Length: 337
Image (tube, rainbow, N blue to C red):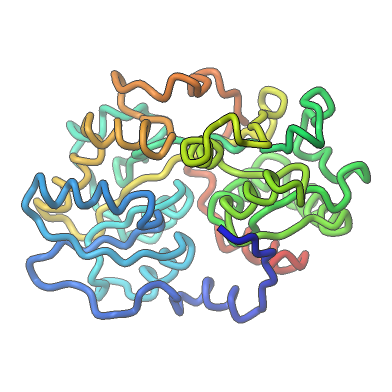
């Protein structure tokens, strides 16, 4: 993938906040099809959705787009939405749907397979796979021992112009939301302003950040853990000029989040879709093909991944990541959107 530093205009942000979606805008939904709005990319989950179609015999029509953008679109469409299921990249957007009364209760016998901390306490959404935020670093330019112990230390002049982020990405926005919830608005704004002043480099997505780190164009990037494993599977680990590293235990930079599902219009096909995504074949797909953490007990993660139980992230409930709009407004205020 060609590296593209991200320069965002106000129109892009307004589009995301107002739900004027750049996702596919063709009319979705034949009466017999299950309609899914997916904030997960077609590259990541398209094959898995096809597996569900083949297994269940249920046609699925998918609108792919940015999670925040699709969530805003769903709220604008209200009860007139054609969507039956929302497949979100992060828990915060799912909680927004719940808070706005757009979700329906999921069967407890289906979602109880997922640990309580990775699903709605009210049974309105459920995580399907987990991932950790990490810093990926260029191993030719940086010694692991020289990496900071806290994400907040990336404002140090030593990292000027050397750090990559993806401000429009839902996972980065969830990380900022978590920082707001744990450290407060003022400290979070100060950190973001200091990052801008330190010439943080902006990219379109996690993949572009990883490519930049591998190419030596930035020394460190803030990404989800699985992007490194995907690229290593493509190029060979021996050909990677980068590695993942965690911050100190409990640091906000180690946030563990989930992708997940909410049903917007209850139906047997919608329930079957959720059930399938929590089945062993789907959980194994997330583990082996996407390099994420499976959430259902009994399905193993990739051998070279640190166990999810050993990833020491901040102590924050995923439902607290709901204020996506507040985070986007803050990112706009500091000039990152």
